[in-house]
Length: 556
Ligand code: KIV
Ligand code: ZN
Image 1 (spheres, rainbow, N blue to C red):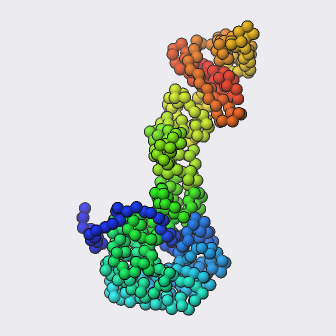
Image 2 (cartoon, rainbow, N blue to C red; image 1 turned 135 degrees about the horizontal axis):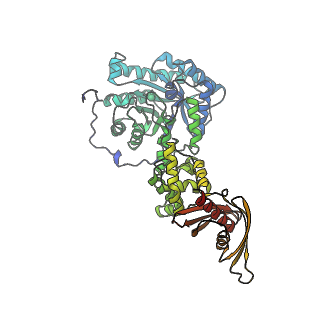
Image 3 (spheres, helix red, strand yellow; image 1 turned 180 degrees about the vertical axis):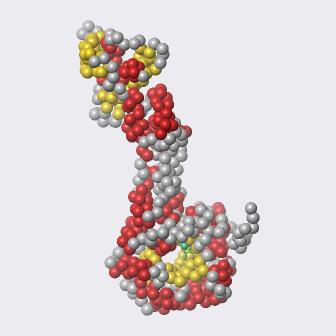
């Protein structure tokens, strides 16, 4: 390995930094660049109708600044901008931004696209890294400075020619993180001075990590240093725009917020050139987790996700934080057990910790419109906790520990055989196939328990069964309805067995709740046979469970 293979950006020295000790205290101004940076990087750019829907979606989520295109570079972008304006599609509280290079004729074209708007952001950019200045433009830094300032003048002339539109200037020294700091600061100062913002106006200085070449902490250092050194902090909004080449765009953006950034540009789910822009969904929901009101609404994240997938024709990783299909699922047995316990005791945990805290679930999936039932999924790694959770959350059946221990190897066998995730319905079907066995050598037709005339504490049972194809009416007495039933069926030619366990529970909480009974019979060889039964009436549920266990004992 050649450790000197890659030229690193000039190292950036900072002696005293304040940002590591800070906390993010408020949400930044958000600017969604999905329709420009995002759309230009899609293998199949969106159609005008799709872009319109996407724009609407961004407005619904709550974005107030949306960059809608690069009108001087593409006819489609020009037309899209015109359509938004002419069809009155832009809500009053939303400002659109358009991107333009610092070239007079392109700036003119950009303003043509904006005609008729009451307000807009004109986003002027020029690359300022030596890599670009020398090797792409074949120019000097001073040439670039002049081009940028000429660009500001051109924007100002165009804006003055359209006095009905309130134009705000955004300037991006492209490749800021690979640009000499002195040059970036002096150029941005001159841009603010050339624009001469009104008293109540600020120039947006967008300082992008166009290609992620640095660690997030260095981006933050650069932002803090820029803010410290610029002459016009009060007259500017510091904006960040992180790309994700090293996979750190969210971390970078968070750290730059600590370092003083006021505004963040990015895209939903991180669409954008190469490995994308910063993902605003993850970033905003991280801030929400820290207790910050972001002004963005992701309470229906699955719908947003599915719509963006459809509009962009790009898949989303099932492990995407917050929106991925698997991110609130647990397959591992120990995780399932912990989540099951955490969710079952969530009120107590909330009281003890003062807020939501559940093992393995850092946020409440319900807050994003995601359902708890899907969170525990069963495969060969899963354990008893997962099985218990699925049966409890999807079918309201709480298994006694002993039944769970008996059932778990059946599930294990199934997941080993299928070598895939098994669904809740399959677990339920397997559970019923194993333990709920009304059909078999013994079938119950009717069971009437009633208090004994002489000793009302004892129960007389009349049992109608079909045993090996023949009908029988059996009577017996016992200490309770279950014991009376056992005495009655023991009159049939059944193998020896004893009733060892009996538990009952309600399914649901209404007066109409069904009962479920779990029983265990042991045969003469001490083999254990569990059975379950369901009925409106608990005694009937118990005798169904006994019949199920007997049928298992006779046929397995
Ligand atoms: O990544 C970038 O630097 C850009 C600029 C145009 C802001 O998209
Ligand atoms: Zn970009």
